[in-house]
Image 1: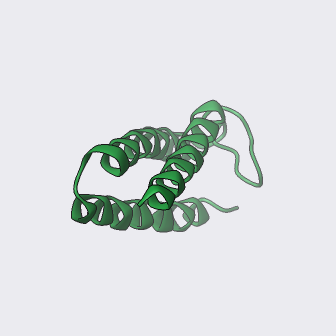
Image 2 (image 1 turned 60 degrees about the vertical axis):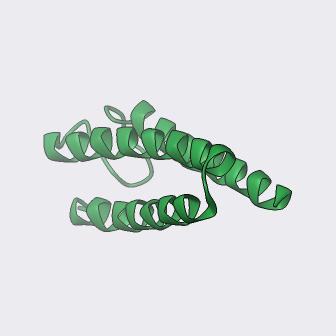
Length: 94
């Protein structure tokens, strides 16, 4: 059970880093995207960054304080959120 908590902590850290990275680049160019030129893309980046940061905190708490089925449900939500992010970003690829 300890390895699950360690891996959950690692996952929460990665998700938090992704959310922070998107938040820090909501008005700057990053990779091949330019949210400073497209207001809709800037809004998507801002919303996804907040969702990822909140999701990382929920994952952290679920990993240490709740039952395994709640952790599994949280992980499924994380997978869905992270899988939809590139799809939403590719819509704005120019």
